Image (cartoon, rainbow, N blue to C red):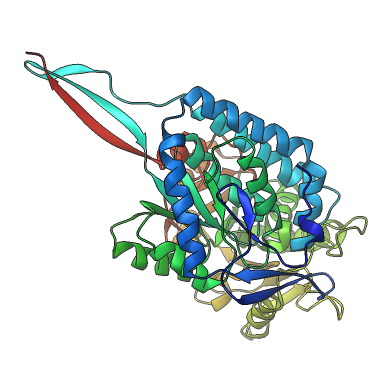
Length: 482
């Protein structure tokens, strides 16, 4: 099927295996974050659109649930192969929606999505449970692992395709059907993915409804789904959890982050600067696992700040998608640009902007890579998620102070430790209150390992066998032997 999404002025929902016009009369402009020009429109789907999507998912569920794990695996492999064969098309659409640099987009994101689909294809045939046995005299018990049912999902704008795959791949592998709402500003790759899924699964297995917050609220509050999953802000996660509680739905939340990078005197300053700059400014810092807080021993503070600034100036340039040598593109929207600028404008007098700190150019939502030193633990920019290319720096005197600074934020998603001391790395990996701890690196992901946090960063795991398990339910079956 040849997609015409990039040529469509008014996008459509994808329900029941086909593109359908939304009933909702509202419209949203799609704004190019590079040029600030409108390049298309998306509908604001209403309650009737959400009803139709869930009806299609409910009708498809018995068919997909009863498909054998081997057949589900084969379908996901074919979806992955189709994505790989159209990787350039996916990259073009993703760059259009987000402004991300085009040169490395296939390797950085599309190939990862293909690998994640293939991982969960394998997971479809690795259902785990207790062995059947006689736990009570005269009775045999065994455990069934089943799909949850129809799942409602909401994905963000920072990694539109990756996050859609993180959500739908484990859900479909486990035998669930899905209604998904992508972020209003970045729907293109999700719609193309839905087209491909429809070619290899029963109609209605994956349905996509476009819209704004009101659409998302209707999706979460609907009576049909047995589970809702969201990647988004803490505020959005709280609203989802509150809405789902009224119907006792299962909830999966992947929310914000404020990742520390703790640098000890024995670390390689050069390697730490290289890794932290990559972890801080990839995707313009619009990443919940981004390295946002450097916590560095006082004895190497000045040397590290100098190395960070130099690395930014040589390797972290921002610009338009097709410019050579660009490391990251614009922020997602005018609102996001204003949010980042607001944090910088409100920096306290004791803070020092070592580099950056302002918008770049007059057109597009570009913000210079920014490093701010002299920060204190209770500063707003240390405690709150900026979600932009801003890196703060604090110094510490001993291990306990470093650990205290790292854990003393509302978020608990990811952290990194930079040291050559094996004992220290073991201690910090134990005591850091984060769902992921990297040692002498920051931000790599693999499909085989779980991703998810604690505290205000949410609960539930994406990726890995644990992510697959989240989309299943456990049933005990007991049978009398006579």
